[in-house]
Length: 149
Image (cartoon, rainbow, N blue to C red; front, side, top):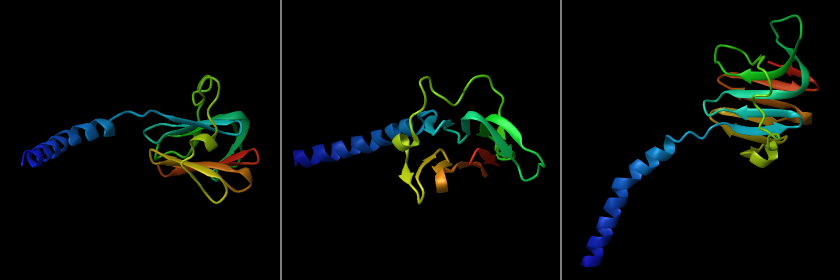
């Protein structure tokens, strides 16, 4: 009888403590997830913002503009804006010493290569080495030296 009472007390204590432990875990701030694809270094913030430092100046094309822009970084940070360049000093999406390869932090493998899904964003390696990210209803794709957004 004492054994049953102890088990019931243990289960009751676990039931009382579990919501507090789970709530603390759910509210923890995991911070950004860093990765690289070739010479492109990216970070996905825990709010779903995606930013990439490009390895070299890259052409950016929009379907609504008749000309190309040359950019060093691109970000998806607003639902109401397409993926767009940022003009911050330095390389804000690159860790000192460089970011780990997407292969080292991937969450899965797609048809053409690895992908990462984090905080509602998805970045993946695609057909013929293309690379793209989607978040907040926006996206960009990089292939052959040009980014389409």
